[in-house]
Length: 616
Image 1 (cartoon, rainbow, N blue to C red):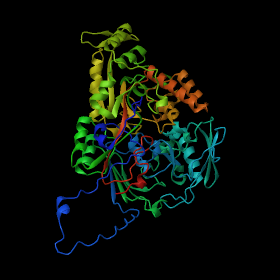
Image 2: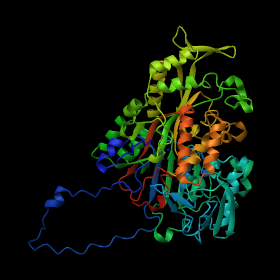
Image 3: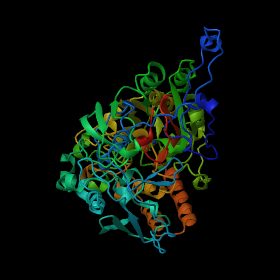
Image 4: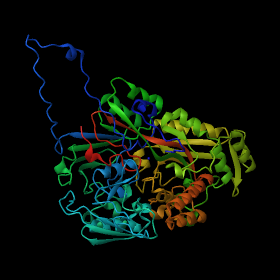
């Protein structure tokens, strides 16, 4: 789940088909257009059959208010299938979105990036005394009377437990990084929680707001805290949200039904009685199911080549509306700093400190620079993404105040070849470069992996062709999204294991104010490895004390402008050291059936964040 260097997409209803391909987003206040039934020619010209004058029109009847469950079944289609409905073990958006139907945070980030109360009775601020003047504590008042789907009471103890669950290292929670700023969570009383930060914070939304802070039921998950987390009821999660799980088939389909204990039921929410979250297939088939056949109501993340997607939504009989939103997502290449050679056995792709080895050529800055210089990201974005993607030099891409002007990504094939020549990488008779490293002749062969997706495979081909021009041999690999983004510790094909030289995917921060949490993904403590069950976000195995120092400095900075300046420095660090190669800043594209009302696109939280308000 977006680079915006003054390139924020301007969305106009009539322009929707021009911005079709990307992933993630749309203006927070933009709801899909709905079509009123057209008046037929016969209706327009038919006169009364009697000679009497037409009767006076009767007053228009008031619309009948819908009751909870009146809208039938909502059909969601994700081309990556769900593997867990525990948001704290999630490995991708497909899991996180499924969890959104069931479990809730104290507040969501709305489509505009501003917090919206969920389980909280109100948002804490300095003005209402909820956020301390020194930025070290925040008091959250919880909505009274909230029930779990099993009928038991939701209380402050559940919030405290969730903090303990996530912060217990052995749980291997994928959301742990977002909770790092939290020192303690205490129950003041049944409906009040006090959060104390490890360092002063400029904004209370750093904790308890967004997808990383969904609350688990203490009674259900307490037996599974720590090392037993993977054995927990992660496909039968009890929640406070609008739906509860009926049946979950991992890597296939999850069926939900209305939570009769949901607090919105008296107000007619949710309108949809059941939800079917179907996974698998690919992005083009998802677009077809929503826009052409009508077999689905919502198609997620239509990362589809513009030439394929445009005709589907431009057709006169198209059944869908496209929702597009700018946010913070960037399609990027991750460069492995460690050696993924299978001959290393359990030590492959492990950091040196854990017995692994440095990568035989990606450890060389000149090599990484050459790989970057060979790729023309502007041409890639233009050819493949159209108006929903722009080539980018940065990983921090929104809001505009955080866009660095200190990076460069101008393509230069000749310069890239010279860099490799200077670094001693010599082209052999077959045109592929090699060099003696550690007494061994190392051939510059790159295994480059990503998910199965037609557009991504074209991106791979584009990069492979670019690298061939500088003497680099590239082997392409694609894995289903359900596997690639799973938390399966035994599966070698996950992104977290990173048993390849280069891999590619998109992700983004929770909100415009949580970039520091996002940048934490490259500190030494976040290095993904066997000892932490590959649950942390630093897949590249990058570790640098100077970068860590910037992060720690930002943690203690309470002035938001100064903290933002440090975040820009952190962006420059990972970009200029080529920890990653940013490719395309993407906007999200979701297909919505024209009959669906109430959907609000959201690049900062789950796309299903307000599903209780959807109607038909």
